[in-house]
Length: 258
Image (cartoon, rainbow, N blue to C red; front, top):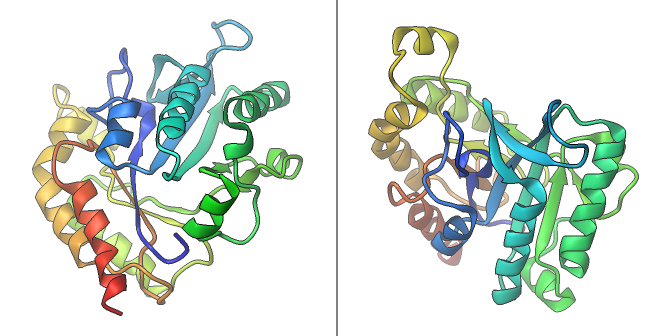
């Protein structure tokens, strides 16, 4: 885990009642497919009940954060040798009290599965301790109060409509050298205002799917490991629509040939 590639999906768009989904599979289906990193964009609706936290990807989902975390925990209990990385971020409408409520939920749901922050462990170390969850939390003031939380994992987000420009951005980031610890290279295309105005009837799915073969080709060329231009976690949208997960898993075979 210290040197290998992980495969990811953005969970924020997997649930019903969202007009901008970024996934076609539910959380359990993503985990079954091999996803081991989930991007959880969390928000509190100002018109919702006090403790109900939702996921958001342009619009709110109907799924409650607590229910989804419980679903992940139940899957992990059935797969004791699997490890996931959960990245909690955005936190729209979250007060300090809601942050503490969320951390309490995380503790109650995952318990001893949580790996306390520190040096990135190997899989063998996590297996020996019975730990299955690294929880990245993108709010430094909250992380400082809770040893179970890891600082936000750096995410290379290109914010590009065209896949060619996204790959140029990722290659540019690689040229600066590998960040310390965990980091994410996102092959996520993004709808900007100009694209939305010019394509009012289209969606993120319609924009992304034709570009997946091009993006997947870049993924297959990557190398995991500690080298200066190696990748770590690779994030993608619409998991299950192509061979993304299998492509990322096979990257780890390159480590065996080193």
